[in-house]
Length: 238
Ligand code: TMP
Ligand code: ASP
Image 1: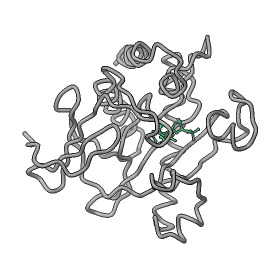
Image 2 (image 1 turned 90 degrees about the vertical axis):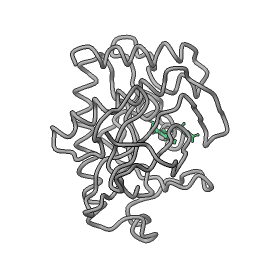
Image 3 (image 1 turned 30 degrees about the vertical axis):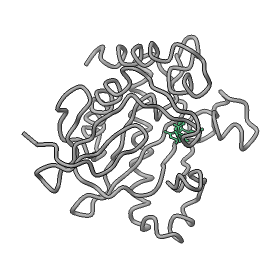
Image 4 (image 1 turned 180 degrees about the horizontal axis):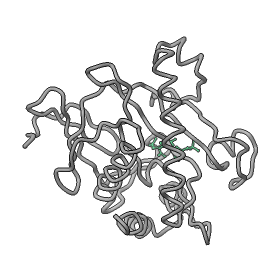
């Protein structure tokens, strides 16, 4: 059994621990929630359990579909063993429907379907507010190589195709999502971080109700209940 050693990183929603194997980390999911670059802080009780388990279910589906991920095994409700990677400092966003910062930046009403699945990059820099960048910016700043960006884009679109169908089956529309990639010890680009209601916009197919972290960001109420409802739908048919 992989043993948790010293904490090597604490993010807004997870802690990362070294293990007795240098090629493996343990991630531990917290209930802490932040929004607007840490300006708004709170707790979503039970979120860590939902996001850990949901991410692992989804990552295993993605592996089967041909997207390599960092997932190794779930240890308990909140903790999972993952491959040690160096995270590329990019937030990779795919949008199917206008919402959030896209709607604001380009003056498009939330809920407007987009003509193509739109990939965006943000530079992962909290001190700069994670600015929107394009692929030339990523190359100019040496955040990733051209080969790595090609893989990131290919995998991100693949994740979108798999997840659109997967969530639709659960009665949820995948509006947009953010993913992160890492580079493993052999130099391969693999999916890392998480896929959860923290990192996806999910709208109920019938009511269009928001079933994701926007309930926390926008003070819409029923935050915990919504995370549990998404979790119940994910677990059904597992
Ligand atoms: P945005 O519309 O605020 O740019 O968000 C796009 C998607 O990315 C949405 O599904 C929420 C997710 N997201 C994160 O996971 N982390 C973040 O820090 C931000 C800003 C967005
Ligand atoms: N902006 C992130 C979110 O809303 C969290 C944060 O930056 O504090 O998901």
